[in-house]
Length: 304
Ligand code: KIV
Image (tube, rainbow, N blue to C red; front, top):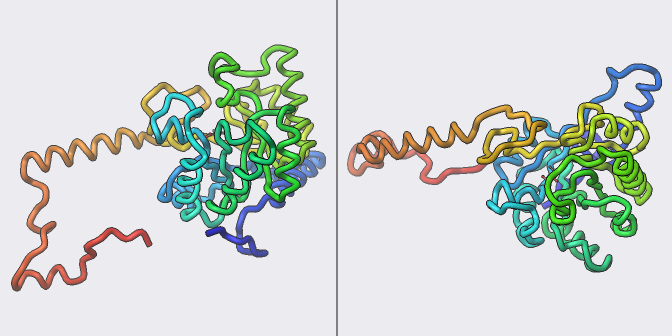
């Protein structure tokens, strides 16, 4: 179920992402920013979305625990279970060939002992074929990140606004705005890198702080609401597509209004069924001599 990277098959790998960071650092030292190439990341939760993202050239596909909110209708990321995450990650795996596939460890799956957290991460690799896992938290995840890395499971860190901490943080707020908060985030970023993570998500932090962390770390920073100076960017795909019901944060640029497209299509269908104009004769199968015309028509939708 996994896609094995072979030299030259274009597969995005963890070493390649690290290499991109070090070559962009080298090129900025040589004041040649043209060589730096932003890492493009998006979330996906199902096969068709993953396939479209992969074929469009996205570098990293994250099966985010935002699944809970944008696809399962919960009002936070907390309720989604490990089994649900694995179920969706398996579908995403089937649609992903080139991109690096990362899955979020959901709330509760890495919060007790390290051995159990490791077993849960191993399930993602074995059952869903993911190539890396993401965990939220900085300094307090040092031991866990080191253990997962030692077990050959690449880890993406995530600091700043960590949605699984919504109850502890008292809401979804920009982090690192005070001097103390900024210093804590710097310590968190350093700890995540020192523990062996290959990349780190910076969510909802001031642009200036994200730029400083990006300059300081050897691993790529992936921003979401962290300004343009990170090594890469990530968005929740439903925000980008306009497939949401609530107000989206200011950093979530909307590239399409798929919600409206779906709504109009379904209204059209309702109208046609009610008025009797769907299905038409040409959309019907026939018996007798007119049946010949049906011969080459598929009777099931094919995904190939
Ligand atoms: O769950 C998620 O979608 C995320 C990203 C947006 C970073 O963690």
